[in-house]
Amino acid sequence: MVNILETFMDAMKSSTDQDENQPLHVGEVMACWIYLAGLELAKVSVQAGINTTTDDELRAILEEDMELGNSQRKRLHDFMIKEGITLPPAPEDMPVSDPNSIPPGVKLTNDVIANELSLKIISLIMRAAGAASESIRTDVGLLFIQFQAEKFAFATRLKHLMRKRGWIKVPPFYVPPGS
Image 1 (cartoon, rainbow, N blue to C red):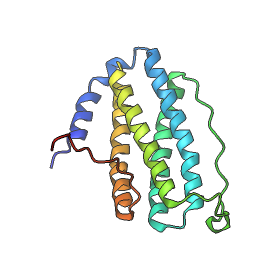
Image 2 (spheres, helix red, strand yellow):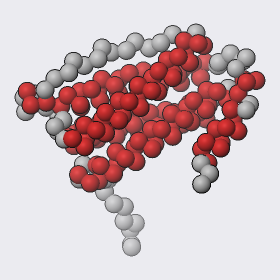
Image 3 (cartoon, one colour):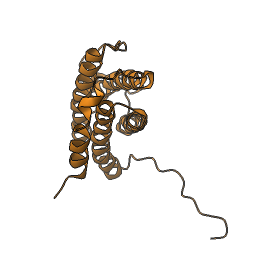
């Protein structure tokens, strides 16, 4: 079966060479900076979740997000260095801790950890979509399309776990008047 995203990306990459000679515009620089800052903050939150949960499935999904975040951080970091963009400050990593030693009044529940992760993923997906649509240079647009697709694929796995455990927050259903 043909992978539509890979086909699209291959077609777009063919026009990348001519764009790389152009400087980035301020919107592209800002998009890179904000996305990397978001990844850096999400990393610390995910580390805290890994330190807090005793749920093996939630820990596995958090570790998967950590790997994806590390991959995206590295690619974006390398791109920004190559383009001469100043990097955002990054918080220090969280020290590893035992989830059973966290007092109950401080320890986040699995429900809260999963929903917080979901909100961070949604935020990064939306940020990547905006950055891709505002990019003039093809290489920048492709980078953010790839980031968005990776986060979206991850989000579907997270949503499945959240539904399975009853952690997903559903707004009230809309019933039109008179129906």
